[in-house]
Length: 277
Image (cartoon, rainbow, N blue to C red; front, side, top):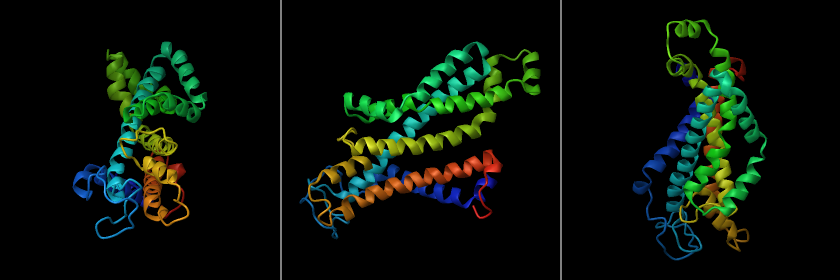
């Protein structure tokens, strides 16, 4: 914790992420209107609608605030699920030699698959749903975590304290839970942040091309609706309809990136970039 506090980029990233999480949690209390409530369409920003309204008259600020909840829910839920699967497979493959070969070949298969095209194809044939997006991202994002955790477990399973615990009759489940897993936790946090960054970007991209859930307004769906409007680039509509959602995506990805840099430097001090970071 002390090392993280000394990392300025890490603190900036954590602050940004906490800001967006608070917006997501308190969205019903912060948003001025229901995001599906309709007013006069394509209004310019005014005292009643600070970011104006979209082509069907929905308040853009309310959409943006509720979009924070949808985007972060998909990102964090899918990331936790994917990293959880990766941890389980990595621990089993690294500790039990009899499962190592088959699990790593399965992992290699998922690592070699071109993820984005396959995700687009699967999402195109599935019903548009937030849970379907979570499922798609989960099944394609566990492999890197599994390989990293497995590599660390291979170095830990033959340590002297593990051998001593085994000689005293400890079960494999006990050794994994209490003598190996705690040492891979720092890597778990790093992977969780890195996977979250990719999933947020992928979800925004899928929603932007129309493969997201149209009933659950995320930042990507806001961009999709904005770009579908015929006069978006020959008027000033983009300034309050498209730009805020794009900035939210960029800032959230930057927050994950900065947190990831800080955690990587804590796990591996040789990666420290410069004295001021």
